[in-house]
Image 1: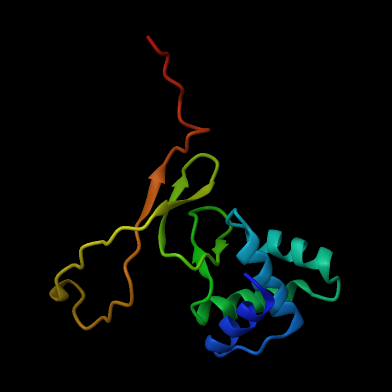
Image 2: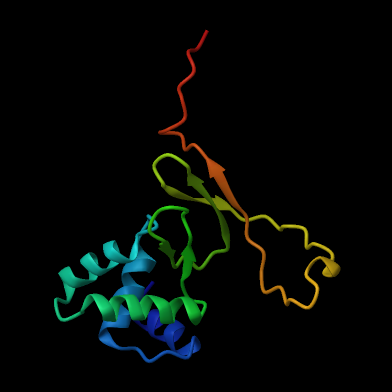
Length: 141
């Protein structure tokens, strides 16, 4: 994603394009993994040492609230972040905590009575189990 596209996405999310916020968003857009806040801070700080840990964490919070970044909760581990523009589901490995993208498919919407007075914003599926690296290898034959 080019610089202007990142600036437009921040503007569309109602956020000012500060150098630190831009750096966080640019890193996430280029990242193939789902980094933790600490990993994002270290990466951004290598590029711009003026960016503090608090600023990085606050920018992540703001980007999540604006809907530009998704926070993927991994039980018992640090949350991971994702700024892929394409809708997708996630698979989280129970053993190593790795978060993988899975192709999007529509999830049936539960009956409205299930939610009472709650308002459903979106529905996402998170699969959990063992990734290909952690799954026991079966002997062929």
